[in-house]
Image: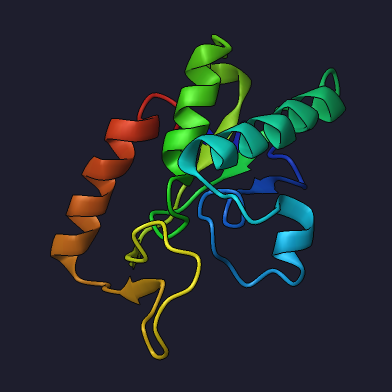
Length: 139
């Protein structure tokens, strides 16, 4: 029963780790210029490792994804499966309504968005299915 759950008060938002270009200041200083999918997955894995370390014995780790966070759901799903994390040992949330459209580019032409908003029923159903494919057993 949902009312009996104790949810974590702090979670790891995957927006800045799931796509190579984001709103963060000094992103190049933190991540460097090379932001391949593999490099970003590695960076995400390192931060998720730290989340699991600091929450161990205290609370279930919570990872927050979204369809607009690039490959965040893929990164989280692959991490959890590679570590054999049981779905009951972690909270994973995701959101819908925005679609990542930057095609893994860091800089876009002026006026081109990294994500587009679509709150239609059709998009909701499409994104629910996409989320199920990447992190289904965890959400």
